[in-house]
Length: 112
Image 1 (cartoon, helix red, strand yellow):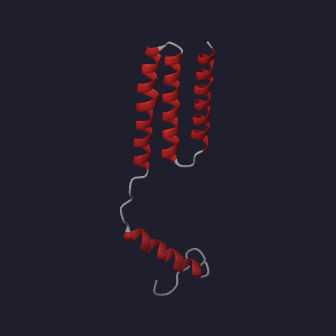
Image 2 (cartoon, rainbow, N blue to C red):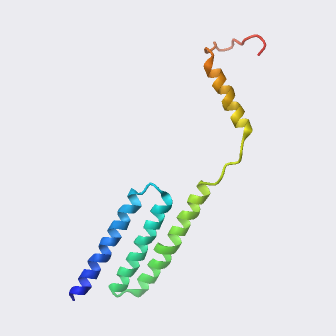
Image 3 (cartoon, rainbow, N blue to C red):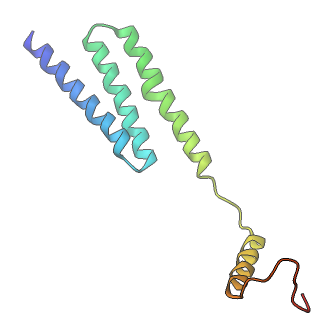
């Protein structure tokens, strides 16, 4: 009976450590992997507690489906932005305009 409690507390400690990593990691991919570890350890805990059906559900949802959805969402957010030369030209013009003194509204320089 003592071995059961040791294993139970060991798994709970790993779940707690992985949950803290989910919150503390600044790298999103690392946080998702830590979240997957939480799901995996919880499923192992459910097996130890004698609930294999709940463990199976936790593996499918908590260790596979949820992290995959998060990684896909992170990948879509980090999609490459196409090169926009118009934006660079506008920023360069804005930088030149910032060097001049501000003009009154409605007053334009000759030739502009």
